[in-house]
Amino acid sequence: MNNSSFQIIEAIKKQLPDNANLIDFFTEILPMKKESAYRRLRGEVPLSLDEARKVASYLNLSLDKLLDIKQKGTYTSSIIRMNGKNLMESYCKTMERIITLMRFVKTDPNAKIYCSSNKLPNSHFYKFPTLCKFKFFKFAYQCRNALNPPKLSEIEIPSGVRDLEIIYQAERQQIETHYIWIRDIFRPILKDIFYFSEMRLVTQEEVWLLIEEIQQLLDDLEIDISVGQTNYRVPYLVYLADTYFDSNYIYIEGNNLKVSAISVFGINYLSTSEEDISNDTKEWIESLMRYSTLISKSGEIEKVNFFNQQIKIIEKFEFKKQI
Image 1 (cartoon, one colour):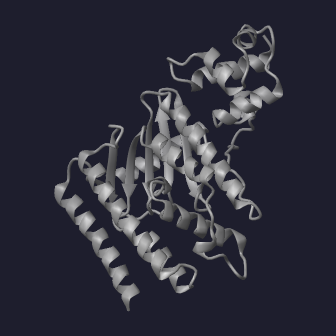
Image 2: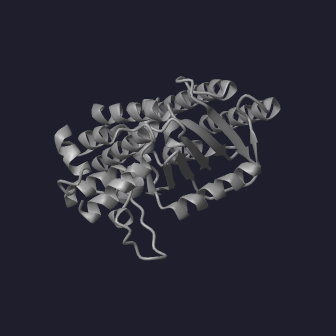
């Protein structure tokens, strides 16, 4: 077998769950017929550069890591570049990339996601169309640097994009997740709404609709946190941090899986499967967890105080809008 192909195939075996079928993996990702996949696994036909690239992209790995030619002390990461001229396309690519990752993570029965957030994760908004639209509106506002930025009412979200948001939310809820949140986690989204309403880019009617969806989101969260699981009966655990952290970090692990990411550009993630970086991210999140309080299925007083605090934040915002 070609040495490079052998290295890549061995790396694939390490990344996939123990019960995964290599033939099915190749026929789905590349795609190719089963006989063609068998010939590559037997070493009769080497993997082409394009085939290796597709496999690496799906596994969120770099070719230099697969081939073990990475320079010592350097690390690789990936991100979809934000193009101000076609933000909707960039947004779609980001969503498709994350959905692909979530589906791959789901193949590992022991996969878990750990996430520390100083604002509500985007995945919690995807059930609510106006909140999703607002998040994209803010993203577009920051990326375009236009003298006359579009109003929220001028933003159109194609039905195909909305479908991706709904798919992602469903995929995300099927994976066990541990969240660490700051205690006033609803404040950032409310401050954004207030800012853009003052800029006259969001109307009063749109503000009330956004607030209505936020209140519904809060009600849904109270149910999920109380039972400690999602609608798919998958563990959903939330911790409240007693210390502040400056960004959103994600660590994903399973039997043969380690991926870490940091939130950038509002809706995107800078991600890597480099073991050193993933281990550092895991240690960072675990250190935050030690200074946090679990409120899922426990910590009743802390949980009640948390939701009362969010309600007060929302009510204070509503009062501002009436002045």
